[in-house]
Image 1: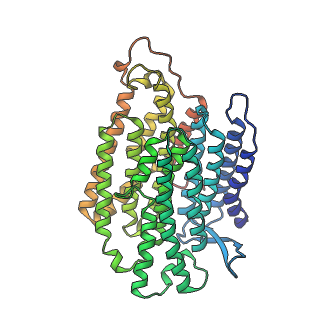
Image 2: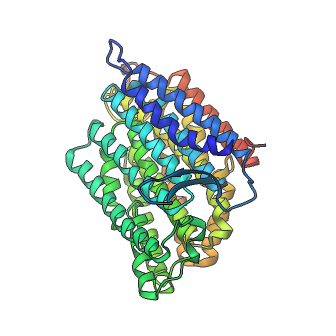
Length: 473
């Protein structure tokens, strides 16, 4: 049964995208049929993922293999899929994040059908990537994740051709480097390679340096680390579509997951010696994002800084002993994906409504009581207050980073503190009633659907703080 569930989770969004492609638009030009199909597909997959949790050993960190698909191109080859708590939590978080992105798409009319179609394709590719148990399947879906996002960026309003081209070139370069390394690994073993057994491959020292350098760069190119961050910062700052913004913001998770699976057990010592330099680049990027978020007046820019500061925090945690932190990173990333996706949904709505104001958006939440309540609760959870799983698990991650390198850890704590400050400052500005001028055009509050979604996310986060896997038992 687990094998069937696993394959359905991966390929159901692919079949759903076909229904979206052939759905009819209504007279207003908004693809409500496409949105309804997308919501049903994502919700069905969420239920299947919850069911799959009950079929795995949640106490076992190794990938538990469930299904294989024969690959006729390679004699004796196959695509192998499996799951553990880490993979399922990330896949579940991505599904919920994209569901919230679809809710945020309700008021956006431009290219809605095409964006929903490519979002389901991205969801299918992401499911295949995070549930891959062998290296070949891991690489195939690593590459396939690029194409739907490239289409979404091209369709979204406000993103130009140069932005989409930069996104494609950076990611295809990482895919090419990963291809060379995968080919070299298969040449060394000449057999199927399970991800959990990559460390068993014996190879000469120089070959190991070459191969793992390619793997390292392939994953780094998907993360917002200077000097490789420009592709994602230029894309996100140009996007005006909440679903596309959410999808692009999920892309770095694949790089983090790759490092969790490949680092540090199988990396030659010559490459490991460069880790302090890489950690320095991480905290330097975190400082830049923190100060830019603090100085910016845009809620979206502050949200962008918050999201990618936390990605870099998890990256620093990955470079600590992963056998200690893997479960904590899984719990924390699941809560983080829910917080950030819900905040994206609300912030993009606030930004659209603020265009009706005559001056700045400051004070707009005084006219939106439901949005104000949901956004305030999410800000408290995202800023690190003890109301969600982010609090305890981030505390454990930061403690381990401090134990590994006190200077890196102290800088990470400072950036997290600065992030909390500018998020709370942004909440205060948006609720500052003195900034509103008389005679403002009527501002609409968020609808009941989005308010309910935000409230449910807050409840899930609170229950996860008490017991991370409460929805399984």
